[in-house]
Image: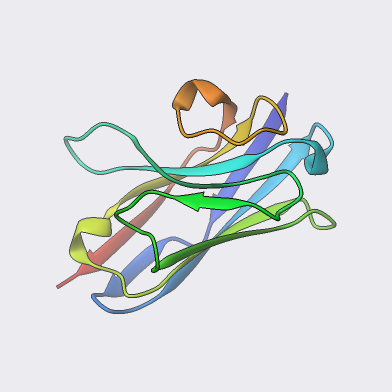
Length: 124
């Protein structure tokens, strides 16, 4: 089992930037993919992006491609979500998730452990 704790959320103006962090403990961090999801009020949780266990491969939802960047530091057991050019529609609770394997996925079923979430609010 993996325990995940997100941080870095907050209130930012449209066009601004934020960096979310997710600290992991439990299973050896460098052996599984990681992902970020978000859930806006009244909406289903949706995939934002993911990163392979090596950090070499990253992939994103079309809605954030070119604006968000995922990275990981396996020595620090931490994954990051750098968000730039933020829009009001990016407002949501952001969750990090640990993959069930080293292979990356986009579905919630591909991830077995979840953080508690961190709120990101983008004002217009």
